[in-house]
Length: 513
Ligand SMILES: Cc1cc2nc3c(=O)[nH]c(=O)nc-3n(C[C@H](O)[C@H](O)[C@H](O)COP(=O)(O)OP(=O)(O)OC[C@H]3O[C@@H](n4cnc5c(N)ncnc54)[C@H](O)[C@@H]3O)c2cc1C
Image (cartoon, rainbow, N blue to C red; front, top):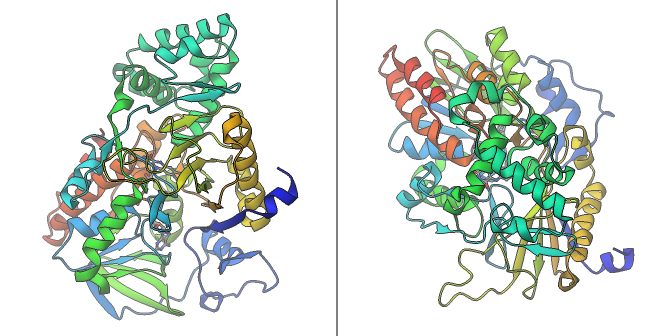
């Protein structure tokens, strides 16, 4: 896109790259070098790195007591608070808003997703939505592909015959699908989860790996060469057998659930849901856990009987004292991809042909139509056509997100690539918004599902490890909610002094959808 054309479009960059910060440097025993580290939206990276490196704080004595502290206000933390309604809980969230990676924004009242997109019929996200009075609607036309200026509906079923590739490539797609369908995935979970998906894509047309190199990073943060074969195979089996047709959602993606949770909880529990509050240390003692948090320029310690940790394991490993070495190492082995999401807002219909459209070989992997499931409901008028583009990055690209100009450059590449996909896409949007996140999605690498997370998420006497990265096989809102349900059961046992609490937590680690 030319510079002059770009100048007419409004680009907005939001979100923050680090997690677990900010923290006032005066709280540190040795203040960092004032000249060091780039600043972004008040987050000081030098200080964050000190926290990461295990810098110790002078923790004040507890001035507050509560039965249960919940750390993190994403869907895991919020749903834990929901399941603990009526009890003495305190939720601490570092951002100025709740929702984490399931957060919706809106343009003139029209919601769109900045992260998590859809649930499956009857999964824990769908069940909770129903309980909250939200009716998630079914997705049709789930997975078209646009490649070589051709729109191909239903890529892995009837679409294979329409792929704009030479005949032998289409045949390779068909053979790959048919070969994968024969694998008894569920019976070989441990074996397949220790292998790379590339073992199974090798020997077929390279266009197949190119397709999965978009699908994988978008859904589970890893390219084919980093993906667990179990997950790659399970996904294709699901798509080709029509399981993907079970997807459900409303505009705003799964941010509609966190939005509703806040709406339901806040009137009664305003004082118990604290935003702009960063937990900096969690110290287990014999009869309580001391949680130090930073809020309004002040460090406070609250003593709790039970703590539910709903932040990524990478952050948990830096906050919690006394973790067994093996568990800490497993937490730190969990890998996360940086993941910006770009929303492009048009004032006229530009694209309404499929829900989640895959576009191999572009600056984005796929894009969704924000109001896809409501656009045809009687009385609904699509005022703006809002398209949400997924642009997962490699781990070594994380630092490109620190710079606003880099973010704008990425957003304008997304727009330029979109405009070239099909001739009718050459339209200018009203606005382009990029929401950046540094460590939002754990990578579904071999062993993460069957081995690493089991070690990383072992409960401590008074600490439960929730968050979606306790589950799997990929990063799922449903898994975050499932763990929060168990966390509520676990905390009841801990508060009752029942030693079987540990068993409740361990049961959650074994079960999976
Ligand atoms: C781009 C994208 C698309 C996705 N699409 C889907 C999808 O279609 N379907 C699906 O099921 N899942 C999807 N996911 C995954 C889904 O978003 C997550 O599984 C879910 O939102 C995770 O919720 P969580 O509460 O476990 O964690 P998070 O959302 O990571 O929440 C953790 C919270 O903890 C807070 N926090 C961190 N450190 C601290 C601290 N020190 N003190 C206090 N608070 C702290 C953070 O600010 C955050 O709010 C997607 C994820 C991304 C990034």
